[in-house]
Length: 270
Image 1 (cartoon, one colour):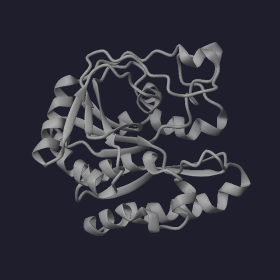
Image 2 (tube, rainbow, N blue to C red):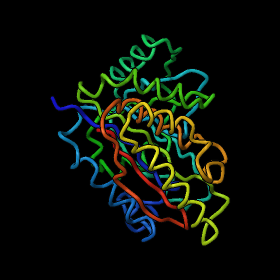
Image 3 (cartoon, rainbow, N blue to C red):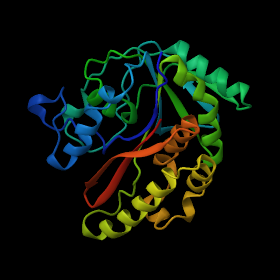
């Protein structure tokens, strides 16, 4: 079984890839989202082999302790607002992966983290929107892991390190967020600051020394335009988990697109 890489992917804005009511069950987005959509649609084909399961950390779920979703057939949580009515009837019926969820919780507990389980919460749009593009047939089991509410970068990197053995067990570890997430600013005024932030973040993420990489990304607030890019950092923290799980493997920026003046990137470890 090949070792899977780990990924930090952008999940777009709300149901942005499914905005055409005439074809609402398939990816059909506004052209500005098309490069990101194409990147997500091609992800599985870039892996060394098809993963047996996915462990995904979304920027839309926070708990006091790292919490795993153990449901067998999760519903969808339409946690976006003000979009067309058809986007609240989307379907994505992938099976849950309760055994993987409990295995992840066990690894975290062994590393000294408090953990919890729950089975009632639906998959938020940080899960089903990008994975519906990447896996339209919904045929790979998925377990979701929460962020920890304190959003401590070093703790999330350490949690990723604890989860790294899953990569050799056929599991794809995915952080789902946005490298830029300031919804209050868009258009020309966003271009300069978001570009400055994106290149600084990418330089830190792709540092060839793994210890330096982790230290620089954990200190993300020191990067240029950090708080412009992330007034609150919940959409950046899934990157920390992916980076930690990536260990000493090489890191690359494998996606960059411009959306509404935002420069948005995706990263791969391994």
